[in-house]
Image (cartoon, each protein chain N blue to C red):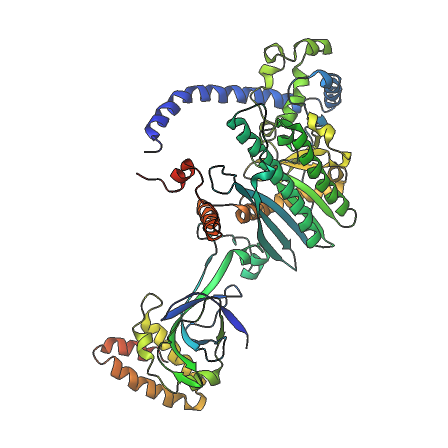
Length: 197
Length: 403
C-alpha cells in the first residue's frame, strides 16, 4: 500500500503527518494506520480530522500568481518552485491500536514515533476495525481540529462504504451508539445523522 | 530603550530640504546626460575615441568601454519552450571571537528551476562549519578593528568563491541539452579583492574565483549555457563616466593635469550625482540597453580574457537592473539574447525580481533564531565533550543579557 505521509508531530490522542505530495492526503474522515516498526509494538489507528496546506516558511506570505494562468496545472508549471515551498499535512485523532494480534478501541500506551510512516487503510481493514465502535466518544469529544460532528459523520460515511452490503446495518449500529452518547444533546445528534446521507 | 525614533525624526526633517535640492540637481544632470547619450547617432564613435585617448590619465572609476551606440536598445528574443535557471547565493554566521569556539558558518542556497513540459524545481541549502584558524593571522599594522575588518573581507571573499564554485557544481548536476542560465546575485567583479589590505590573500581568492568562472566557460562548450549576475538598484556609474568625455576639455593634457582633483575636472559638475540607471529609465519594459565592457583596473587581472565582464541594463518592470555577463556570453549574440530574455522572464514571473535568486537567498538566509540555535548547539556539543564553554564575558552578556 502506498505511503500517505510521515509523522511530524505526535501525542497520545492525535498525530500530524506530512504528505509526500502537495495538496494530497487521505480524505477527511479516513481511517489511517501507523504500523509498528518492531515486533510486539503497537500499530496505531487514527481518523483524519484536519487537512492543511501552508507555506513551509511561516514568515513568507503566499501571494496570488495566477491572473494570467489558464489553469492551476499551468500555474504550477510556470512557477515550479511553489511545489517546494508549501506542504500538505493531515492531523488524525488516535482511535485505537493493535498489538500482539488483538485490536483495541482505546488510546495506546505510547503515541506512534515521530517520522513513522502513515498509510490509508484499505476497505477490508476499515470494516474489520469498525466491528467495534466504542471509540466514537474520542471523535465526539475532540477539540482543536475540524468540528467534532463533521469528523464523526465523515468517518461513519466512509466506514459504511467499507461494509459493502452490510452498510445499512452498520449505520443502524452506529446510530444507536450515537443516540446513547448524545442523549442530552438532540441537536448535535440530529446534525450528525443529517450528515450521514 | 534601544533606539529613540524621536531623535531620528528630528534629524531627518533637518536633512529633507538638502535632499530635495540634490534631487532637482540630479534631474538636471540626468537631462543633460541623456541629451549627450541620444545626440547625433554617429557622434558616439567620436565619444569613444575621446574616451580612449584619456583612459590612461583618468583618476575616477574607469569608464565603461563603448562597444556600440550607447543609445541603442533591444527587445528580448523569445525563449525556447524548455529551459532552466540555476542560482546560488550565500549567507553566513560570522566569526565570533567572544564565543567559546572561534568558528563561522557558510550557508549556500542552491536552486534549480526547470521550465516547460518537464517543469520542476530543486531547492536546497548546504551548510559548512569552518574553524577560525584559516582567518586568524596577526596583522602587523595593528589593532583589533583592523583584524576584524580583515576577517570580514576574507569571509566575503570566501563566500564569493563558494557561491561560484557551487554554481559550477549545480550546472554539472543539472545536465541538460536545453538552454540553461546560471545566475548569481551581485557583481561578477570581485570588488572586495581589489579593496583588501592583504593583497596576497585577495589574489589567492581571486585566482580561485576566476578558476570557477573559467570552469563555467568550459562547460558552455558542450551545452547551451550562459552565466550572468544580476544587480538590483545598481549604483555603478561606468556609463556615466564614459559620458564625461562629452563634457571634457578637448585636449587630453587638461585631463592629465587636473583629473586627480575632482574640483578641477570640467566634467564633474555635469555628472557627479548620477548613476548609470538614471540614464536608462526610458527603456521600455523588457528592453535592454546597449552592451558595454567594464574596465575597472581589476579587470586586467580577469584572465583568461573570456572572463572579462560586460554588462547591460534592463527594464524589468519594477526597476532598471544591471546584468553582468562574461565576455564569452557577450560575444555570442544568441546566448546574450537568451540571457536577456531569461532574466526578464524571471523578473516577470516574480513581481520584478528573479525567482531563482529570491529562492536561493531564502534557502541561504540565516535567521536570528537559526543563529541562536547554532550557538546553542556549539555550547551543547562542547559541554558534552568536556570542553570549556566560557567564551568571553562580553559574549555571555550578548547571548543572555541580564538586567
